[in-house]
Image (tube, rainbow over all chains, first blue to last red; front, side, top):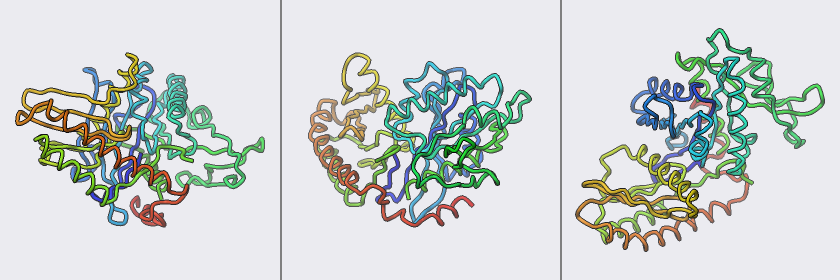
Length: 225
Length: 163
C-alpha cells in the first residue's frame, strides 16, 4: 500500500521479491545493500534460520531519488521460498505495490518455479489483488549455470501471458527492455496476450539486479501517477 | 476498482491532528514515545522522545509482529488480538490496532505502569480510529483513476529518476 506522506515529504512503496527457495531473492537484496550509498539505504533486516534460510522475510529500505520534492522510498522485502512457509509468505504480500518473481533458471528447478508462481497467484487473489494488472517483473536468475534452461523455455513455462479481452488494451506494446519484442501482442490463434517484462540475472555477481529493481520501481511509480 | 493495494496519503493537517492526540496521550500516560505504523510496515508518524533506533526497521518489524499475531489469534479461534504487550527489563511496548489499518506502538519505561498506559490508550485508540476512518473514507471517495495532484503528469520526472 503506497503512502504519500505530505508531512515528511515521502512517497513510500512496497516491493516484494517472490520465488522458489534458494532462487536468489535474498542475494538480490544483499547486492542492492552492498552497492547503494549508505546514505540512501537503511539497515538490511533478515529474519532467518541459523542456516541463513529466510524464515519470515528480509527487508531493505532504499531511497531512489526525488520527485516533485518528495523522496521516493522503496521498501524491499523477500519472502521465505520454501513451500511450507506459506502462512508467513502470505503476510508479507499485504499492501504490496510491486512484485519481482525471482525464478531459478536451472532445468531441475522448473517445477519449483511453477509451484511458486501458482502460489503467488493464489496468495494475491486471496487478498483481492490482480497480479496481471499490477507492477510485475520476472527475473530469470542463475543464467551463468551450465544446467540453465533456455530463455525460450523459461518464457513459455513461466511467462506465457494472460489474455487481454478489453479492446482498448488490444494494441501492440513494445517491451522497451528487449528490442523487437512486445509485452502485449496478438498471437497466432488470434488472441491478444500480455506478458510481464523479464530480466536475465546472475544475482551473486549483481548482473541484472539493478535492471530488475529499476524496472519494477518505475512501474510502481507510474501506476501511482 | 483497485487491482492491487490501495494507496493513501497523509496530509500535513492529518499529521498535525494525529500528533496532537499522541502528545496528549503521552502527557497523560507518562509513556516515552508513540509511533503510528501502517499495516504494510510503513512508519506514519512518531511523537514524544526521539527513538534512539532505526525507526524504519522498527516499523516493519512491528507490523510483521502484529500480522503474525493476527494469524495466531485466528488459529486459536479469535478474530484478532487487538493489543499486544512486550515486557522488557527497562523498556516495554504496547501495540494496539487502530481501524484495522494502522498500529499504535507505545514505548514506556518504569516512570509509568502498564495499567496506566493501557487505561489512557483506550481513549487514544478511539480518537485515532475516528481520524483514520475519516482519512480512509476521503481517500476511497476519490474518483477512480484520479491521481493525487502530486503525481499527475510526472512521467518525464520518473523516467529521469532512472536514467
